[in-house]
Image 1: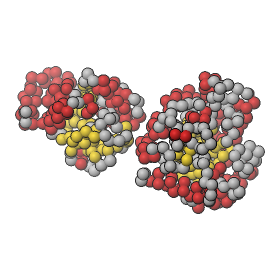
Image 2 (image 1 turned 60 degrees about the horizontal axis):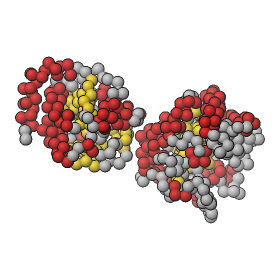
Image 3 (image 1 turned 120 degrees about the horizontal axis):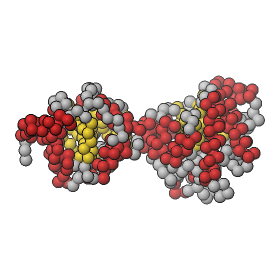
Image 4 (image 1 turned 45 degrees about the vertical axis):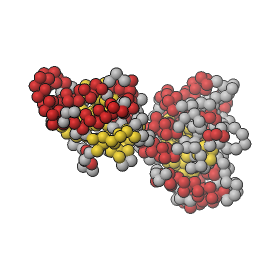
Length: 204
Length: 279
């Protein structure tokens, strides 16, 4: 398995080759979805949110496609794009989950715990304090307290981190299906996430 | 959130004044007045008498949370009989007028009764039409009409999505839902009604429900808060989710056989605990 350093070097050197196509990517709102039903549902949900003016790539229900694209997405973030990475744990086989853990750790330096059932609600504290429905399983994320943007009880389940000129917002519980179901609070959170990703979250 | 309870809970021999004293002593912030239920507040009660009720309520250190009525079950806006429809509109207008006198901004109505003789579509159309007219009067008076979800009893507006569509068809922001978390029985989940109808909620009735009893037999399907099947922790979370911070009004059906005043105290304590979120 590649180390994080090797992966980053690969992303940076590959950057020259993929820069032409990436520079187009890094200027606009894109939705990356998998072939699974929930990822598609999530993508339909995110498509209802008005696109921000800066570069945002929404990874809906991250699965095989997202894992393959991770170094490329990391490069986009280095160049200024914001990634909204949404987990969809129930779609993953155990070996795929281990792959996800490994990719998040090596590419984005994000450590996640095992999936758990979070109860009905997730509390967002940034960019807008709001409560939204959880979606099946969630995953705890280990990060600096200042990076936490949502939690279930005391467990952080979403975070935001800067990467180069852009960054990543990691969601340990799906949000897109709630948008698809027209949940007003989810819509407010998603809109604010897409529009505020560049601003600094409060230190808690 | 503020706590209130209906004046129909006052033990039988208690006067209005004694009842207010009990409600205040139990720690409530307000009182729900039921037009047509107790002798002190009837259709024939004059404006001067209503003013007197208002003074007594203020002197007891309480506010009026809302004006409800017990008349809709006999005189409903969806009735096939024009005289009954007119009577329903009259008592709803009286609720609006008295709410203004009491200085509160919400009334409760039971609008639409589906029966074997009066089919659903007919009830729907007539109820929407009536509330469109009454909604204009409510807007002028700046009093919100809260249509209660008596799902099992009315056989009408059985799901939150249907209720939302109904409010959309009425199309007046002064007409919303007076949500009763006990009335949903086994056709759904109270927290989902709260989530879907959040901004439209005018007031909330609290009571618990014993779902296995159904709405039949000799025993009440309703029971005291925390004794039944409602998921109170989730209901509390849902209220936080939609940002509801208004009145909570206890509505008890089954009554204590002994020490009836104790039910008023116990209910106040349960509501306080519910609001605190320590569940």
